[in-house]
Image 1 (spheres, rainbow, N blue to C red):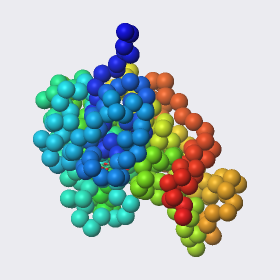
Image 2: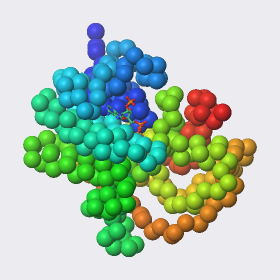
Image 3: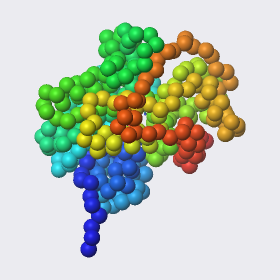
Image 4: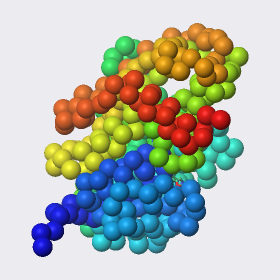
Length: 322
Ligand SMILES: NC(=O)c1ccc[n+]([C@@H]2O[C@H](COP(=O)([O-])OP(=O)(O)OC[C@H]3O[C@@H](n4cnc5c(N)ncnc54)[C@H](OP(=O)(O)O)[C@@H]3O)[C@@H](O)[C@H]2O)c1
């Protein structure tokens, strides 16, 4: 009997999160066997994973914490590749940034990479963030930021942007680790990721849209937002894994839009939600990021309208708009 050609075995850390779930879904649809790490496999918050196509045969969940090397090692053992997605993404300022954000991001990434070396992983794709790119006051005003631009860690520290600091340190150390240990490490830096949720719990970046749709705030700052669809992020990550020529870091962004335009686009489609009453002009921002390097590899992104419509539908289905 003819068998389906399998694409090999990969591990996805943070498999139950917003981005991780879409990465798992895409990999399963492409006949990969997936080891997904979650912190508490029996928790009902991962039920959405158990409903994915081909899950029974091709997905195994592993209990793993980023600060527990042995747990990561067990999940990664026997795999060909790793997608390191897990990292705390706080939606508010952290009271203990060292333990809540920096350590899991930096030490956690180091642990994943060590386990990759031990298991002779062929390539690890690390999810970093635009937070590791754009927070750089020395970058020439008006010049488009590409992969050569790194957030300034001293500036992150001085301004207490702990998540930015954590992502910058984790990504730069990951690339350095790869060079030092001969591990093929590719990193990706997405801007704000929105789109349909698979999971039942609200993640920090979806909260940005939910806040616009349902809080009826008295006022909200009119900021420039750089957005990308979660499904296009998952496609980009798998592209970085599959394309032999991928190397170094990749910015992943699709649309740049002011909050005001975003609110207007949503209002046109869904006039009845509780939108912010007023948009206040903040200081003019001129940051601009380019995904040209990723696009040269063949990455494409969908129209923002599709992202918004599918996001709102998923929020309704998950009862997040009530
Ligand atoms: N969403 C965005 O706008 C955005 C933009 C740029 C980059 N990113 C990056 O994308 C990745 C995924 O973010 P997301 O938006 O999908 O957030 P999310 O839904 O909050 O997912 C984060 C995942 O990390 C896991 N995690 C956190 N701390 C952990 C620890 N100590 N040990 C093991 N797992 C841990 C969580 O596991 P549990 O399920 O066990 O809680 C969860 O699955 C992160 O690396 C984030 O920095 C996100």
